[in-house]
Length: 497
Image (tube, rainbow, N blue to C red):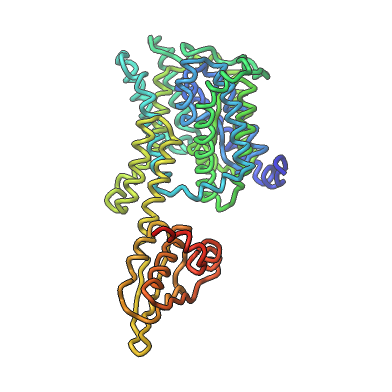
């Protein structure tokens, strides 16, 4: 059942899950605010969404210990919708996003992650890092030197604080960065932008609300072009994160249940005034490394986040934007796979092309789903081309019986069918041709058509053709679609020639 979880998921690691939940909640606050600002909405939209999504996925998600909340990947897709139509249409798009994700779960589309190669994942992650960094540039243009100094100081704190004995390992450095820069800005009374300038922070618990948009076809036409990419990107990032957490914890997860869980969470977020979100790679890794393993850690992260936001809202409004810029630059640097640059010299050219194409398309179009689609398409084409090279045909002539035997070895499909046909000598005068298929596999209609062409041509030249050694799968597709043993079908094809 979707809503039932094992007892171990909740009570198997209480201390570790609670402490990890606190750490994740502290780290979530600046990111939720920053992602809200990227999307062009009030900080409370991202904060409410992070609370709601984390709590709901704790109960209904398919991957215990994974953190889901408002994310940069999703926020980047919302910018134009918010700018052109406003928050209410964003909430409507969030609801529709959740519906699409639930449908994807019931269609078992979670299994499609097996088609996403490692090079596509690397390109996806690198493009996400670049887009997050680019989103910070408006905060660093046409500003005073104080902003640059604060941003540089924030980055120094983030990267140097963890080296302090004991305390550096206990408290998250992004939180220390925010606290320190806020104290400095308030003490020196610096005239720089703060979170409070971006919109009012929530001081109450979220309440149920239905988006104030007309329920008609025009509204659907507005939100549909955003909801579909949001649903796809959300599921892609969630499935990728789930795979990473599976590897870190040596445990499995239910990807299709995760699709449904993410959908329910986004519907809940939309009804509570939040934006769409998905699993977070960075926060999930923080949770795992902090000792979180079960659903309790995800629940605690969401609950503690809301408590701190509601009761510490006055302090949060004083946070300088430079502090959030520093945090987001840290996120982009940490997200980017720097190893992939070194691997450009070591990996095959096809792998590099797939990775770089994914990055280029995503950064150019600001559409993560489009980039992943292009990457998967290229990876598939390269794979098909590579496999086709492993198909070859050996032949041997028995002069006593005037019989030519062709041994087909490898995979015969649309990309190797022409090579298969070209391997036969149709002008050779032999009494019999034996085509040995013991080590071959025919995959599709194109390969069967190629077999028909070979057999029919050889018989037309007067040879007796015999096919031997077909495996069960090949025999099934040949029996169903081949025509070389069906005179009526051959007449239809050859008629008029």
